[in-house]
Amino acid sequence: MAAGPTPVESRWVECRDGQIARIGAGDPPRRPDLDLDGMLLLPGLINAHCHLDYSHLRGMLSGRRGFADWIGQINALKRHSSLEDFSGAIRAGFDEAISFGTTSLVNIEAYPEIVGGIEAPVRTWWAIEGIDLRVPFDFGPLPELRAVSPHSPYTASAGLYRRARRIAETTGAVFTTHVGESGEEHEMFAQARGPLYELMDRIGRDMCDCGQGGSLGLLLDEGLLPRGSLLVHMNYFGEGDLARCAKEGHAVVHCPRSHGFFGYRAFAFDAMRAAGVPVLLATDSLASCATLSLFDEMRAFAAAHPGVPAAGVIDMVTRAPAAALGMAGQIGAIAIGGCADLIAIPDDGDPDHAATVLRHRGAVPFVMAGGKVLRGP
Ligand SMILES: [Zn+2]
Image (cartoon, rainbow, N blue to C red; front, side, top):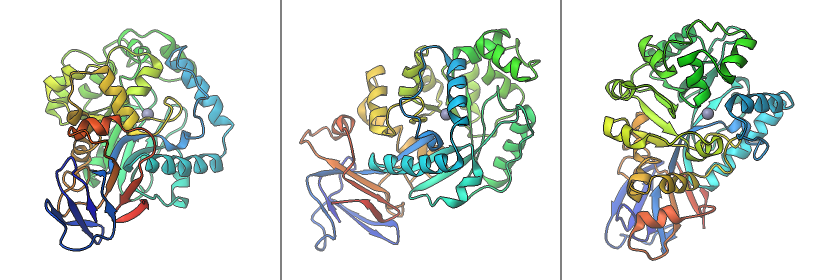
């Protein structure tokens, strides 16, 4: 295939057996199978955190009355959904994510029993979600591309975290957890009060770990996180936590539009960058954002952090998540020997290609995953 000038400055790319075999800067050696002239070629985007289960809940929830209230709203909607609804939501979510150029996802899966009946059209880590508030939880056999996700410090016990940590350390599974998402979570752990504290207390959670410090500090103090964990949200954390995260190789997954939906305090990107903690961008679910587009997510992040160069923002949905998932050079990059996960967007003529990428809106006209064209001219 041939392509116009790209952010990696290649003119053409040759793919073989699902991998990138050759990259060239001059004219292609033979007539291309696919001519993408006038388009910018990019690596497929990586969504490090989504819940495709909830793709049928778009626009149905409000974040205005706080996080504990939102939990009540989503639980009520989930009670009215069947496993068929969730399967349909996952399929629709895949279609939407692919239409926006996503070729790899970490999908938090609350219903592992439906995974076997769904063929993922793109590279998918099915991160099995563990909650043991009311009943004990067992991860069971994990689907291919293993990942485990104790839901959060307020819904998963230390024992569940320990089992997930062991699975990650013995099998290489990706480990990801929500932590420090809301001020209410911080209030619950640091001060043993507030709406989330009251909700969890009512449910019957053992609240003896509250009133001592932040939720991330608790996970770090108790040694519940394996090296290289993906920590989702981190809108609230304690002093000294970032240095510890950097030392233990954790990465933070930030969901800019979900952050805006709930109106959380400013995301501490500069402090994370200064501490050497990688930040990845992700969509979260359609229960707290409007689309599964990482382009929309990049734009939202760039608007809130105008000092970060466009190339640095693109890095947060390509190279940085690839590294955090242990696939540096395989995905999130156009590299010889890497996966042929490629997308192309219209070139608007701006010599600053990264700026063009951040301006792109709507569907992505060309998407290839593992050498297979999923959307194309
Ligand atoms: Zn989430």
